[in-house]
Length: 476
Image (cartoon, rainbow, N blue to C red; front, side, top):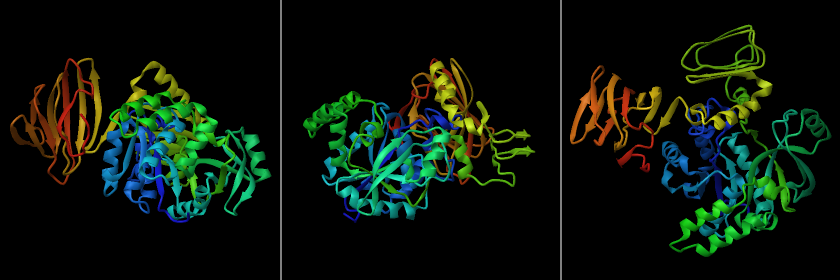
């Protein structure tokens, strides 16, 4: 097979991106951030595959908690976005269960399906080189090989896993002799010096049927859940059986479950530039640098500072005499560390998770399809927010069971739906929405609308919302 007739893109978008804290949080993971341009990393990934693939041959695997974010980002960036298949994980269980579910779904659609697996939070360029590599690898995948793309190392690093190649296959790739998991820097230098090694990109190409065959052969605990799902296909119990079967699959990576064990693994050298954006130091690859090789974002002043990442927030960030440092300032958290230790941010996130800290769960500002909001202050029975509603956007028609809301317009003009009444509010005007009242805010102007919202009541959580109508088809 050299054409794209049976090719489907499977985009993995369920991770939390812990090493990008404090920019990323559990409810706002890395793939939803706009850190490399106006589009989010997920939108950039979709843009690499659709086109040339039509939307109905794109499948996104994500956590159930992220489905609203995925849907509105698709609608923001893709025509016929509703044609994209969405596969929701009941819980995060690593890549092997996610890809097993994706392969099972695709075989229901097309028994000849070939899966192109792409993480949603990587940087790849140029797109033409990506597709040149894919086309070179397609005949290998069609013949039953499990293909991964190997990146020619630009330098020794312990941030990536390595693949050592074996014998050539069809003049298009190589058998995989062995995988080397993130070696220490001296070992990485030796690997590059001896040659025939690639960085492990985490991008794959294979027939869906071939993946399930090898998965059941080398990780037999997948066989029973998959068999149960197959028997339930087309019955009224199918959805419940799939969810239960997913929870019974072992929590394994696809590398460990299959690629490190199968004799059908092949590596195809990639023509494209690639980064997994595995830590904040990746900002050096995405953003322009000043004369001292610093990456600066926001209001930054630096003196005698070089080779550093200075990411400012709403306030001034000033740095003096820094070398090879990372400084990331957000409204609720500040990170300072040497660039060489940026990978250890994951340990900070682990401690925040252990403490059940809000700094692990929530970003200071959260994006929504209509704009964004930032929590300015909160307590047990109140919360103060700053809402920014985009031009010609509106919130859902909604109500709350446990809280009332007081709105003050600080910039722009708001169209308010308050029960059965509709009226406009201008700057310095306010209104009160009692709990249990249907309401909506709409911005009918060309400029952003800014509102201060004061919530009060027995419960002010984000899940106290009942939607009656929503332009973005969110649940609730």
